[in-house]
Length: 194
Ligand code: GRF
Image (tube, rainbow, N blue to C red):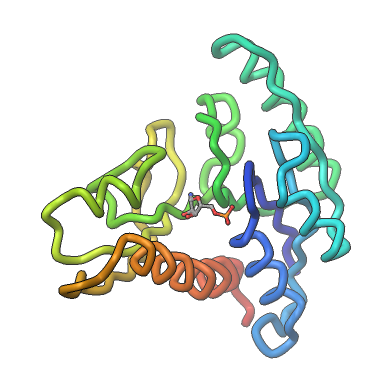
């Protein structure tokens, strides 16, 4: 049985999909647990979801500034993650760049989901960038987190063809449906025992 924490900044739909899969004994017979949501944005909707799901949450306040400020927040996060006995940290729309301090501490236990087919279109605008490209396929990537931006080793990808007449909204919706399916399955698979 392993403990997972999710880090999110916004809506938290992936967080919810993971939490719901974890609470399904058919999908998660080993009883792995989502024990904590960490959010950097007071008032973000993911916090409301955590309350509804009965999962503890904390808000880590980032001050203004560079690496030093980020590392202060990261020390706070690591303290909380350790106190909850976290074995794996799952980034799901966490819009902060993590420094080598945090990445080093959680290396091999830190994963992210990206709404594009990496290594193409890294960064904060994966969907818009892949939509604007000539790519004939769109999709989703789950990868280990290293010190770069969306550069870590790829764990799994899933793609779908861009069809004639497809709108950006439809593509976006399809990407989110894929994310909500693929992320919980992948996290549970990595934790093993299922
Ligand atoms: C997802 O599209 C994810 O791929 C990206 O940020 C978005 C988060 O959405 N990294 P949500 O907060 O889980 O709804």
